[in-house]
Length: 73
Image (cartoon, rainbow, N blue to C red; front, side, top):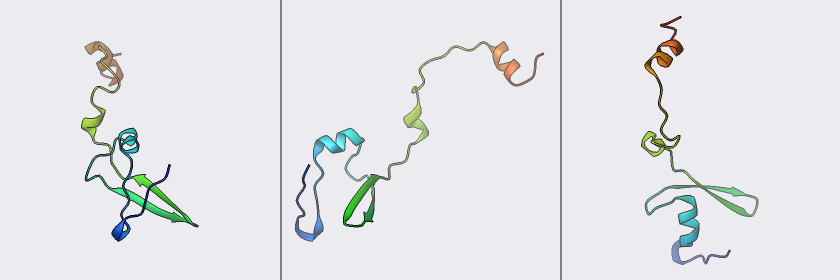
């Protein structure tokens, strides 16, 4: 995939790349120079709200919680 360097050194990342990485306007990227290559990485941090519901819904009995905490034998 090719992108063009515009005035002031600006490049535009294709929309498909932004979507696949979950990037939005205003997000920050980390830039690394390695030899004659440029490596861009998302600097986006995961927030706890991003994880909500990720593992699905699990029912747990109060007794199981008490046992896990060592409150019941």
